[in-house]
Image (cartoon, rainbow, N blue to C red):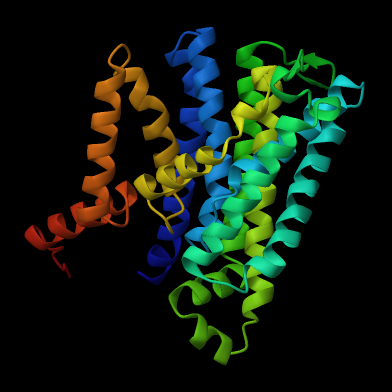
Length: 328
């Protein structure tokens, strides 16, 4: 019995990973390689990476950030400018993530000394500054004329210019970054993040450095957004400041709330629901906003843990009606 109980979590992890990788592999088959749907699926993958980083900042350490669109823009413009000037994508992407990480450290150092809505205002101001910089520095960013012709990379001689090929590139990054995030959350860092979220005063009493761990979570979340931006630039092949407005950060926050803040699967659920809902309501733009607003309000009122929390409610009710029977 002991061996069976110890192996059960491993079996469940393998099952979850099998489903996750299976869905990624089956998407091109399900959509028959349709270029538009592969583009949408790739865009969802990019947003999942962004929301994973935001979830670390908000869901696991309780720090409200409205600057993720700016971090994403830093990564996107780094990759765009470097690849357009002949540098390798594989050099530009880590540099873009590093710039976002350093920006997160610089912003986080003074910003994390304030809390709640004050922190939100600081990050919102940072997003505004970055947006104005991208809009007005024409010689560097091209302003609102943008940067066209961003090339897609190759991988060991394999051309990734098609939407299907680039989808698998983003899917590969998604898998790697998912593994990295799981490692972080199950490490000593992750336990410190969760302790801060639950009760920061108690966490500090047991020796957790609040500023250090909050700063680390903030910077890692920014780096994830930088990677997402670096993937978004070659996906779109054209970027301008309108791709990273301040209100885009609010959309990221809504995705996280709908999916489930503080739940690992929340990033996946939120990005998928918010991105796919317009596809089902295409041609009824006003209806889309009505339905979307209604869903957001219902979740905030009845399920503050998001759609990811619905599974807990469902299984709790099922187990209450059909409690497990103990057998000899």
